Image 1: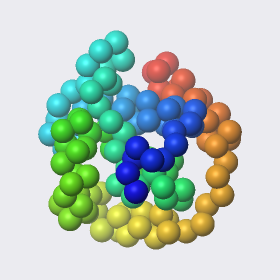
Image 2: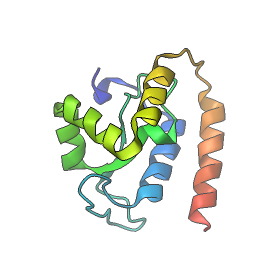
Image 3: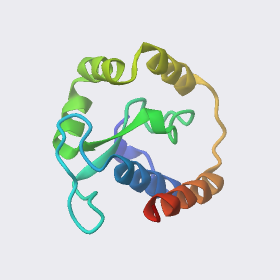
Length: 125
């Protein structure tokens, strides 16, 4: 499923901004974000896709990537998997795979409130 076909909402927007501010640079190539907040040009890239509700808002599942690296990983799944294992370790990646397949009810209003609060805390550090 393409990221273009999955609807984004307020929770997605707040979480994406939080991830990009948390990381500030592409986690693969080190290219920094730019612009007022220093996050323009970075994407919040989900390893286990956003269609997997169990890991959609899991910080360990998402890395800031520049558009080029994000596109490359999207086209090279095996390399993305290997990079995730190298970066996070087999124990965490196995946990994320299991978590991505577990049922998780959508609680978007609650997620939006939570991630706006986390974003506020990050912005006030």
